[in-house]
Length: 299
Image 1 (cartoon, rainbow, N blue to C red):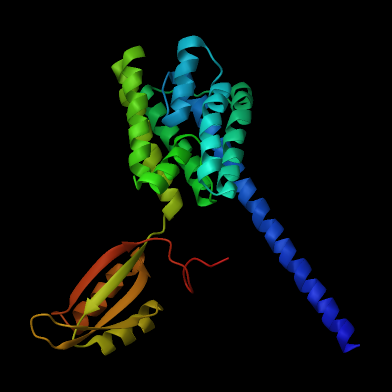
Image 2 (spheres, rainbow, N blue to C red; image 1 turned 120 degrees about the vertical axis):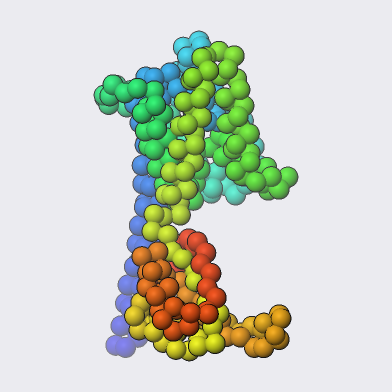
């Protein structure tokens, strides 16, 4: 009887594990699809109706649409073919497949959103801002789920791997190429408003990836570190770590305090430090993607 119960328990655990894997996969696919759909909506609602451009491969496809009337979704598809072939040769196939899903959703959703989503009457400045916001949210969601939007993103990852050129630098140069080409065919103001849209896209993407609730890493050097650590733990409910060090000038041993807190708690930390030791040395740095108790849960 105990043997049967053990087998049932093992079967139940295996089934639960498979369900978790399936749910995680479905969540990933849904996230990538949602992000790609937002990019397509941004193009149809805020970019194409106002004659703006976008960065990378999408920008070239949009330019082709303006100049010769070639469909944007087909342009994105054709221009991405050699890049995805290159990606399959150089990168992990899973990452390339996830990116292909994102690109595929953009290609499919573009003609649908063009038909059914209304275009609000905006001036060029507002159109460039909102195109950047919506695209940035979409790109950020896709990257957060471990994929990319294809095109220059894949090229940038490959260049990082082969030539150690930063991903940001490659994307920047590709966007510069699009803006430079646009000067030959369109008004200067189109290039300038497109540059604003690209900048907003980059900023919003970073915010989505890093999270809006940024945390701070606080390091404190004081001769009364034990008293400070006790108050910090009691009054902010955050853990504290001691770091051992030596003063370079005096040669005396120092006990440093390090803790991670939300930006809302910085004022309280400073208050505690000043009340205990006004000669304490404190420095605070930006910290993102903190995992552990009290912060982001690990999956």
